[in-house]
Image (cartoon, rainbow, N blue to C red; front, side, top):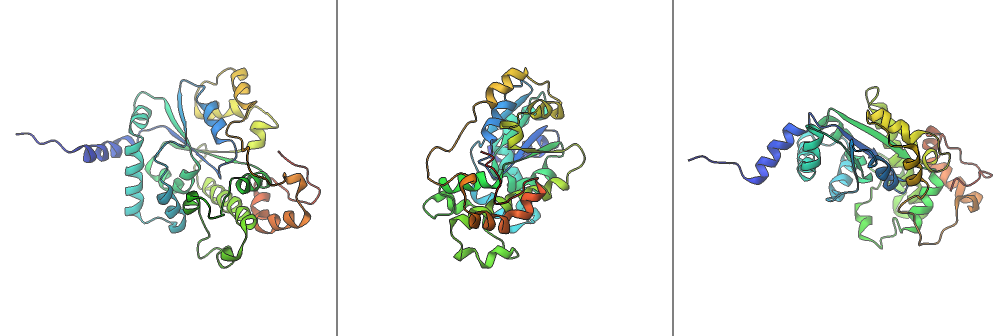
Amino acid sequence: MFSFPGKQPLRQWLADRIAPNASVLFVLSTGRCGTTSLASVLELSDRIHATHEPKPWYLEETRNAYLQSPVPPETARANMEAFTSTRLKPLLRAATIGPIYAECSNRLTYYAPELLNWFPNSKYVHLYRHPGDVVRSGIRRGYYTGNSNWDLARITPREDDPAFEMWENWPQFERCCWYWHAVNAYCADFMRTLPEGRGLSIAAEDLFVNRDDIGTRVFEWLGAPPPPRGRIESVLSTPENVQQSGDFPKYRDWTPAQRATLNEIAGATAARLGYEIRADEPSIA
């Protein structure tokens, strides 16, 4: 009598064989910077299957990945097997007939080193936005207030981070400034480790404000025929998932003290990404 493996062992067996061949793109970010719209742009191509924050989100696992970095090998393998098994169908297509599987989920940012080892054909976009705009959006959404279960999944400083000792006494504003810095520093450091041609850094302002040809260049970089420019413009002209509720001033209306605090916490990382924080800086929003 023949014996067949159960469903879960079969999924793990498939995961091990899919990962080396899958063509995948992961978009790394803080969130609140245009990932929903970027997924919609990528989805315009019939050679790309793009998703925005599909479930499961791996909230606890990705937070632990950040706090434990580097992740122990046995934990990393378990994380990647679980991730692959829950995205099995699109990854199976990406490993065989296509299309490229693209996932725009800021939670996967903290899985980046593990994803790079697990998917040898993976590419990465670091999407970032002016710190003043992300901090404002985070405050309006209630980041680090303790009033949402989401706060249990947000990253906090590791013990080797200078912010670790100050964290408990920091109010929400300082915590959101740190969040922008920590995530983007993490992404920028990771992008420097990638082989040539495997990473692309994009400022949200180039997508939504300056409106250069970055949308077309992303498709060319991925090796996918770009859709008509007008279709890309149609998506980008109406940003998705825009924060509507909450009350906090736009960056142009911040006090000098608020800008000084942002600069103290996030200024070095902002400069790495081409942003200068100064008292007379106009709003990017």
